[in-house]
Length: 523
Image 1 (cartoon, rainbow, N blue to C red):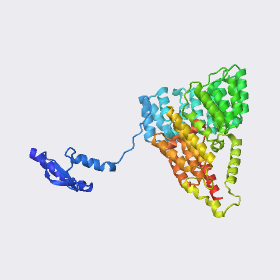
Image 2 (spheres, one colour):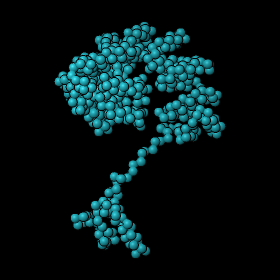
Image 3 (cartoon, rainbow, N blue to C red):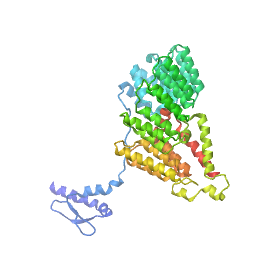
Image 4 (cartoon, rainbow, N blue to C red):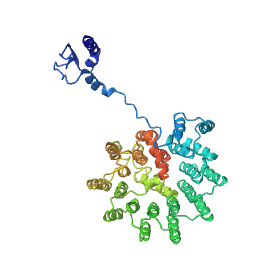
């Protein structure tokens, strides 16, 4: 038996000789006392016997090993066994049409006799980007099942889902179906409907839903008031938002800090930061401001280029014993860069009037850059200056004042980091926006690389800002690469999350920006 083992060892090692030679090793024909072949380098020096040939081979081929992607779990939380049966069937082999889905659901009901809790768990697990359409179909089917005993909450969830996806027609039909089934909409149902109209900038429909809610005798609470104020704020109507605040106070309904922040943000987007400060002083007599309140004030002033007031709001936050978070630092970075409303308007955050102002500002920028003025040769107007190859906007070099602002913003971030406030995704995104707005595209790309190096995951806004940086520089190849990244994998999920949470259509804005800047390059 020992002799057989030695023979097997020698045969096995001999079969690996070509691999050793390929990896820069030669195998000596002699065996050491332990029965293991000794390895020598090409120069004749002997390798250590502490590492067996098999280990050396593994080390030499490690870089060629295929790395399999991590398997995604079937469920993200605790679900019932009956729910797991349906989740597994729908996720592993999705139905091709609605009839097939209904047949599977009916078979599931007959086979396992589920309870209400089982379908609720299934609906929660189906609320992902790749199964969202299937989720809506399952929710619609569940409302017609007697054993499920659907209530107002179930209809409201369907209304909310359609509202987040921008499917207003289906949302309205689901809301009407709730009443047709004899279930009266409550305060939460109307608030969800109003919020959906606000996302779509349908102010008149939101107002009609608000009046209908009041006519039905439903008394709005602080959250409902805040929802309607946010609708006015996104539509660029802060005066109506403040009128609603006065009505709220007259009804003895105490506003929350979230309510205050919504009005501050509305006045900031409308270019009226002084009114934002005035409303803040009026409401804070009975409330203690938090970090979000000071951040909203800082953003209102910074968004309109009033850096000193933005810094003063930030200092008041620190003096109040509050620790600034990532959003607070990001808003201050934007204030130091005199980030005007253009970036917000490009992403549709300033209403229709704001979009018009944004178009006027972009037209003014093109005139400043000398496009269409007849200055210089036609070739120069089309291709811009040579500085674009170095990461500058075509035909435009950052001024010394702009470079100074960028240095001040970077210095601010470093000082805060030294004080224990580490920059996060929002701060890095604001730095990318800052460099992009001043034509420092190469620096914007370096900030993005540094963000990834420290292990931070870019969000949808980060990709959009990076896209803007390349678009302003006329680098459509890089724009295309960013778009591909946004359309695939985890980045696509981040885009969907941003659309839901902030009511912004990132993908549509990117397409609009790409077309606009590509047209500018031609003209």
